[in-house]
Image 1 (cartoon, each protein chain N blue to C red):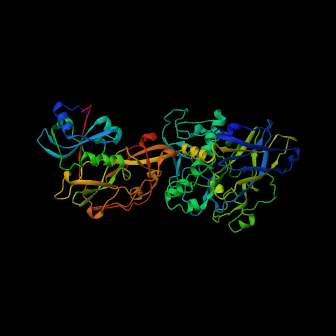
Image 2 (tube, chains in turn green, red; image 1 turned 135 degrees about the vertical axis):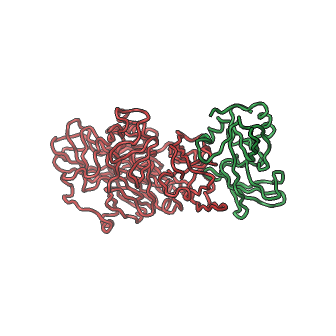
Image 3 (cartoon, helix red, strand yellow; image 1 turned 90 degrees about the vertical axis):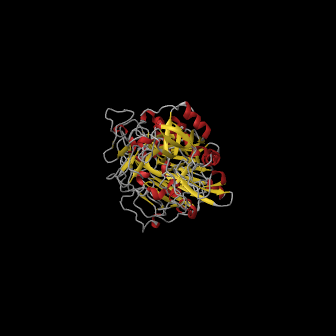
Length: 164
Length: 475
């Protein structure tokens, strides 16, 4: 299926959300309301050419990826599961912990810790109960506490063509 | 005497020598010696030739070729010996020493990884069956009338380092350098045991035991802090380009030819010591694990039971690569102080030829050594898919196809589905050390053993010839 460009409304949504960046590819981790009225909590927007150079394979050709087409998106909004771009960029800049995955700890301002093993996209994390984005103090690269390991969140790709 | 500086193209020519055959070799063996030859003070190579430089259709048999070497290294030992039929099928004479992992990157190039289970080679572009001398897939470059032939049916004449680039003897010196310097003379490697045997990991041992680059200097990465081997030796330039057309088959060559010693016996482990510490390169000593220690040693290049025949205007070369790092530390040097050969010919009463050597060193000594090593290419692999991207810093030198249970071996979490495989090459200089080793990963409902330091950090933009291999079962 052809990958379409963003319409002006969707561009405006993404500009509000802001992006994280891993080398050449930019990510807009968001939630989506589809044209059918369905709410999808974790959707990652990316420009198709940037995505392909980085991920190597289109989502529809990888049985372990999910995808929603841009023409089926009605509204984009912030997701509560987002790792703030500042911390995501720090992880991307540091580099992955192993082949296709990141290990890291999130340290909250009250000293609580939460550990994660994510794939190459670190922007969606499951926060412990009672914690949210604004309570993050810092992150620790390549370290995890197995007793504090959070489950992984699934996400859906939404690719578009052209600039935001 | 003639020397050819092209043979040491990127190295600084230092010295050469030659002793010619006389008519004393007519119908009997003549002892040739090059005495007081060569002091190796820095990293480089030494080539030993036996040559027949006569245009007459007259073979000369050379027997019992040795080089005596003196080193301060206390832990000099043999790591692996490989010998091939012309199309790359390993002979039964191939062996490796105890304590060393098998190194698959042998025949043809550093790209051609040999799978001892299937008996196939994985070239960069195609898989190859050495038993039939045929690739399994068509030639992407369409070089020959048949798209499946290996090395254009001329394995003695050239090399095909990646399955789509045949380098024939038309580039005689180039082929020699490609096949010989980089890849061809890869039959054996002597190395310092401590660097490899105690490297501490499969990665370090396998990668640093010098085989991917023939007899050239090895490379120490990971826990191998001594930067590779201190001395290496290789012989049998099988398929190393134009040399092999003259060298013929190693195995069995010369059987039935009058033997200089008059007898044909076989050394065994039990009598190895009686052979004066020599390791004979026919591979029959398969368990020679004792270290040689420092002192004067003799490298036997053609043993006294198997003379080789050198045809008209031909030669056979042997190469010794030396890395003086360890010697310098010990305040010493390696001295190649005697090369001998026993030529023999029957028909003509006088021939040109003899034994030659050329010594050269890497430019800039240790820095030059590091520079040259850094230019070497190694194949690297990355599995990805699902939550794992193709782009990333982590790669493995192990081809996942040939590592059973690769997921656990590499400590891959479930976020990487392993559905896809990226293969590329990287120059050693672009491998970033210091990456934290893969550690065991425990996730809810999913436990990985992992923990093997199987990965390297590489700048993706420095990856050469990246290509996705076909979609396959997940690793």
